[in-house]
Length: 334
Image (tube, rainbow, N blue to C red; front, side):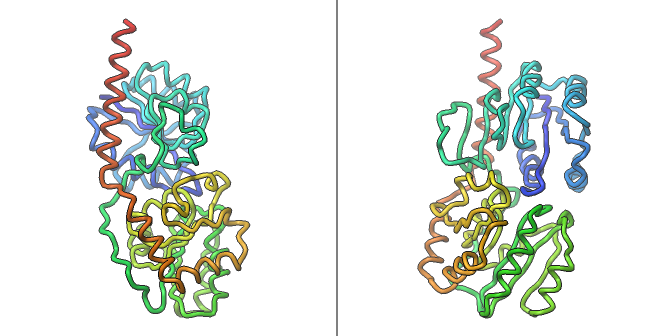
């Protein structure tokens, strides 16, 4: 199978789609695979290089289609965010299966299957080609569940907004947390793509020895040590659910407010749009988890019902079924 993998990432979601691709690819029966990445996405290109993945870069959709024709794939995976119907119409001329991930765009309706891990409340769940739910989240790392029965003394809060953090929710959150006059450990996690002045964060750390500002490419290891995680509503909540840790969600983008996974039913305190959050709301959510042990344990128990261990196998099986079905349809058409 010659696989064309269209990959792109968004500033507020982070680089998880690249991790998903690296995990998924070895499980697929591919003889040749090429990754197609927008030349403007320099952070993704650099990250792929660390994964030893060389990408075909394209400037625009016309350039992409030219490169695709040269490659002539017989399967296409689109993990590039919301798709445009016009582009997907052109991709369909390759007469091969179209597999999409996390696509709320108009083009998703033309795909053969869409894995919607960033699914919304089931208002349009009748779309037959969509697989709604956490299935499309493929864990990039094997993680052992953390036994989180007891709070640390003092409680440890990890603030982890991914990638560029366009709304600077990292700073906003820390500014509110330092006004809580109780003993706390606070770890603020940023990576090299953080688009704001890190010295502003470090100034808070100067006021309290219990605040650490950590620049790392591996936030997982710090999230693992936490009692409470504060993050946005895209992919990090899935990682937190693997670890079974109470989590407060501040949405980084309006679209995240509609996502059904990081909600109360799955063990998350979702406070809505982060840039509009009131200090008292965030502080109350933190104190509720710290002071009310039953509440904290209820969040953990809800997350324990969510399993990701079979997701890779399930996704691969559904992709293979889709490819087989597509081949059968083409044979009938002939």
